[in-house]
Length: 630
Ligand code: ADP
Image (cartoon, rainbow, N blue to C red; front, side):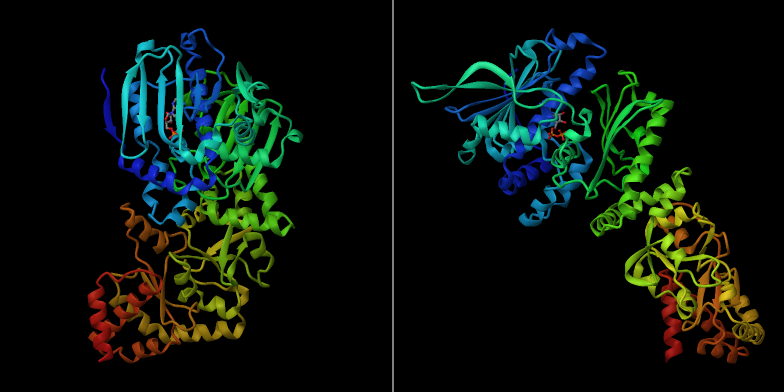
């Protein structure tokens, strides 16, 4: 087969441009990325060879060799892993397969400064080679393929790349970097060794380099034909905790999570008992781009007795902890375990439950710490992942109480600070029987909602919930620690013992006097409102909408409709403030059909607007208001 020239996918070209233009301040990471790819390739071979040992081609010792040629100015990273077929080389090195990375590239603004901050959160993988090389040659052959089925892939890292067939005796992949003039420092044993020590010490296979010897005749170091391992090559998680420094934990995280920032927290344990396994689990500092994709599984890698089995093993973490990264290494699972098998396995279920508890424990430790720095970490965590964690309220029955304690909400008590349900309970007013909350699309709408008026007047705190997931989780979280959760927008407001006798009496009298107006309003709004009643909920506003106790909130119904899903077409209840000037005006209009009708409609539409909704017929609403003003 002759040489072909192919173009990079547009996103790759974009990424390449960015890599070469914004990562030069941290050039050395290219080596970590390429060694990590080599290590992944060896893991893949080890895994495929479980079913077909012939793939080892009688050379089962997996390793990475790093070498350089000072004259030719090349640095080579060679592995004897799975290798690539021609099509794989074209696909893997010419396109971006991962949706997360594609999303990321879409977000790039072209502004170098902000882009390079963004890229810091991403693994740039193979393309990072172009930070130090102006040309990369990849020679590869898939394990099990014939020597003549080797491929050479060459690119200068701009618009296109070439591929051609070659003979390659040894399976695996060699990445040959043709070093740029300003990257010649990397053709140096000492430099390379120190980078490997920093980033790749813990990868589980040996990274080999040629030994060097001082040649006094030439008065320089010469390389010998003898290779030695330059990394520890022991799985980090398998070492005793006391032998691992925080830096090593952080470096390991960065490698497995493709993140350049340190993790927020980690937990490392050897679990013994029915199931024996080691867990090393991390909470990242930043949310990945695809956090909202519920299909995304946690970045937990499954190993069995140190052999890599699979990435992103979804059965090892519940979906609401999908932000967790790390490694679980089981001593008991079979090596040939498949994704399907994992889903059904009781052993895996036990591991998942154990790991879930560990992660929740790690979060509780941060949240409950007396130490300000730890508390701040929790706040940072919550800002990034709180809405995902709350999904657990609906998903994880066993741990609901623990998750509820970890939840934080905005509240009428403070413009900035958030509150936990326990804190809320601790400062409930004498006689207050429920935890009050209001769901809304934005914090702004929530804070100015008429539904809060009576609560504000009485100084009763109301939680303001604005995450999309809140509505759904509240259908599971009916009470907290024995106190019911009560929406201020559902059912008749009952401040119970919080209201004094005089207030109750006054309300009753007002309601009695207002009865004829209510009857007429019911008639005028019979197509829109399920019921009309007088309320003590309001202070400054004329009216508001509520739903029946146990009914679906208007907010949730609206969200469902926006998402194109069926929502019950239940009508809200209009509650009217009999003390308000508009209510009095209504009273005076009782004899005039059309004017009463118009004002009734305005009242209803305004109540809808005040809670962030839209009148059915906005133009008609405007017309009525204008007529009224004129
Ligand atoms: P990532 O490793 O994050 O998937 P990369 O850009 O680093 O992204 O690599 C893209 C793909 O190229 C890899 O997923 C893998 O399939 C393939 N690849 C890269 N390096 C090697 C290698 N040394 N051996 C075999 N395949 C490789």
